[in-house]
Image (cartoon, rainbow, N blue to C red):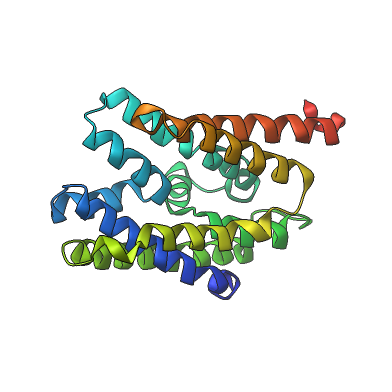
Length: 226
């Protein structure tokens, strides 16, 4: 069931994985290092954020900070998923957290948000059915991208294809006022701050987008502010 639920997003995930693999290869990483980064980091947005910082010789703390800020959404994902997996051992929860991806979360929560009982086997298997295929697809497509890195010409503009793929995933989710305001705020800041060094404009856009979304959510739902 999980695999069927995320199937519409697998095309975008495929494009994103290939583009990330190409980017790692073109950034100067060896094939082995790029493959290790794909396996250990397993987060396309954080990987693509770290690459230009690494190429620019940014300090290690800034690279880690950038990756953490870009992936702050997984803190929210983890908090939302906790009731469904709290009875598992910490090792299993750690594995679930590592495997968690956006499309799996988006498919899981609407289906089980109002479930009278949380933590059932059905919920666990649904989540695994979504995240395990996503993990394998990401690793395979990343390896394909790493292999293609040396032969793909810049004129193909694969980075733009990845942007379109992400937009295809994001736009259907922008269906509430807080989300729309968050997206607009992040877009404006990213555009204005694009000349900042070390891609810091991206970090500023992420932070502002999160803050605006939280503010809009608090205004819309004052009781949930606590």
